[in-house]
Length: 328
Image (cartoon, rainbow, N blue to C red; front, side, top):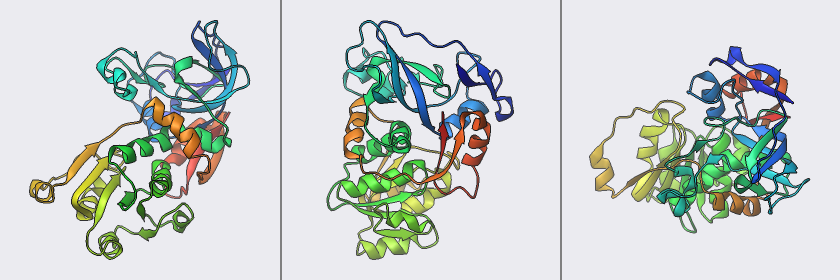
């Protein structure tokens, strides 16, 4: 089969190669990969994060069709359309037993500790598959972009009557945070320059330069109940400026840096909470396959598998307006 490979870190080292078709173990499934979303994790995997095995296949966000199943597989069959829950987990540690597979003490992320999905085929444990009936771009966006946002919103108890401010609202996770927060009944303020976010459910659109004023006016001075910061350093000060009393600031990305200056008195005097999240659970991915059936995906550009390196470069392009996808 055809796959994207590298033997040394760096986008310049990506190549198209032929590798042996995978065979399923007793509890495994071989899927024919159809589409993959391109995410920052993929860039970092190729650019320098230590990964195994080598030569390595990247690709963390995968949608495909079941081609072959192991002897003991019961829940999927050939022809089923599926997305891959991309966490390796043992199912036995205390985190797994409470349903937090993404925090497994003996686990990791597929495409870091295993081969990824930027190939014509991928072998995956049966337990890591969720059946879907969605268009390919949306299905391929569920395992990372949508799940990361959904888990963060649930962790911060977003619901009716809440005001949610989303920084990085036009990005991979941001466009889903806007839609899902709206579905949960919240008032949503998107921090972006992209007017199309109104069509995705944003009640207000603000820029960094006026976000405090917009939030103040929209909430009659109460400010935000939940602030989502997927950007890191660049959005820290603005995030804190719009956080209301008993507000929750949730962080799951550091695209613009991880170091910030913290005013502790601003946190304790407002009874605020800083919440870190990563990924989501298998149960939440299954929920998304149902509740996000009418979600929208803004696609900037689709690339063929052979142009994976260019897709990764485009991910950091200043002119990008929506998701970068790989069609396989």
